[in-house]
Amino acid sequence: MSADATDAVPLGGPLFQTDPAGLYRRMRREHGAVTPVVLDGGVPAWLVLGYRELHQVTGDPVLFSRDSDLWNQWENIPEDWPLLPMIGRRQPSILYTVGERHRLRAAMVSDALEAVDPHLLRAHAERFADELVDRLCAKGEADLVGEYAMLLPVRVLARLYGFSDEQGPALVTALNDMIDGRERALAGQAHLATSMARLLADRRAGPADDVASRMLADDSGFSEEEIAQDLMVMMAAGHQPTADWIGNSLRLMLTDDRFAASLFGGRNSVAEAMNEVLWEDTPTQNVAGRWASRDTQLGGRRIRSGDLVLLGLQGANSDPLVRTDGSALTGGNNAHFSFGHGEHRCPFPAQEIAEVIARTGIEVVLDRLPDIDLAVPAGSLTRRPSPWLRGLTELPVRFTPTTALGGTSP
Image (cartoon, rainbow, N blue to C red; front, side, top):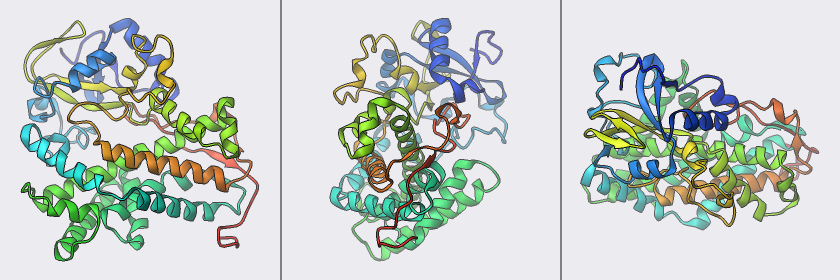
């Protein structure tokens, strides 16, 4: 595969913002289950759109490795390549460890998250969600992305990890600055790194009942630097997709008549909307990546040793070979790829935490804001122009003004 492949599809452009489903269908029709794509700067890669092919890639970590040192394009990657923060070399986090080292590290993370008290998790999520709604409820209008969804997950995660409530707002700013990717991204990253290092030093001196303390207590021999890296990855990976899960689900419920009943106190429809979003409008659309450890075949394509293979999560979710009758969206079917698959998937306890935060966030909005409705035509809602993460730029709503929980206007 070369960067000048004539049939390669640029992994960018307005269709990822306006019609990714149509784009994935066209890719599959014209190129098959494994599509040659070109990243920023003419860098070649393969995008796996087939459900079975993606299952094959994620289920074979030896053939399709997470070790980015294998990449056969490093000599063509400039130091200022914009995707380096996502596809970096020798990154110290859990994302890029392999083999037994990765299994031990993943077990440490999973154990620390699994010990989170589910009742306490729900209580934290409700409290922070109510605080955010208190700031909005007297106005009669709000942007549920910028003023709510993008502020909630990191507050809950920070509390679970061991940060104080007073530290939460600055962490929200840091995470959102990093996601924004502009001039404040480096400052946000520096604040997050400094905060994590300080938290671990505090917890080393005085352990508590939190995720950071449990990871420090693990006997697998990981350094504080490694644990700090994993906590930062977990917070970043948990915040943005969960915020988009909230925003995308609320959009569906406010624009689709099938979910109208849930706006008046129904609960089953909330879960159904969230599940449908994971199948049809998943926050994490595509993931980089895996690298072929040797020459192989995949979906009728010749994959060379060192080729970059991208995981097309949304493309696989919509593969017509597994969606022939539409049954994927019913009965709580969670066989989607929205949390990945295989040993590098999102840990199951992390999935459960994200689901509680998202569902609680949605339910609090529906409980607290009466007769909520879109403030703009549904067709005017816009998405971020990203092939990686799919979420709304804003979700303007209007509602009858009401008072804060304390009985007074915020």
